[in-house]
Image (cartoon, rainbow over all chains, first blue to last red; front, side, top):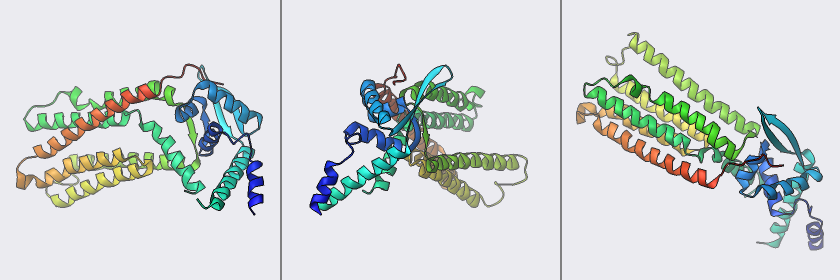
Length: 104
Length: 209
């Protein structure tokens, strides 16, 4: 039993297992889509930091980034993909069962 | 805290970002203060100038513009999930219905079709009291933002409740005083919230990625 949960912990998705990326995915899970500024203002992190984490999530296929225009202004819309949603839920469930079994 | 509760809490916190700019406090604070100025002038026998009577309209327009020009560039835009959008629809429906009902009742009483003065004064004031609490309570419940309920309570106790007590206390000034104090407190809260919002959320120059 314990070995099983440890191997699950070792196999945790490394793309998700990073504080900022967990926060990004959590926020994207509760909305349909959000723009870059919305994520930045909610997470209170720098533009560069957010951009690099979004890049990693996009490369993994966990978020979809759509570049569009609102009037003359560029607008970057971000939404979580089905794969991203599934993997993030699996990630949370693994952490949840780990905590549950730790008896804390 | 389970997953659903966690997501609900995060969604609520992120939705509340829209109220952090203090614009609603500025709107309702101004509304209360202009209402009290109008009422005092009317009661003192002066007819308040039209611009004071209609002060709330330019204030609302200015605040809507500020929301568009100051708040949105700082917090960005978002499309909420279906349940939140439904809640927002209900807020809109409640607010519009309340306006329509109030307008119809006002029109009927002006035309003399209903006589609130001659019929049961107690009943009409009680209905008015409940109506204000109910409408603002519903809006507050759907937005999870207590300011709306506070506004309903201030109006309900400031107007119908005070009018009801008038035969015994012989003045409406306590009610208007209550609204004025609440209005000033709400307005000051709005100014403080706006200043801290501007400090905490600077304008993002580019759109990021």
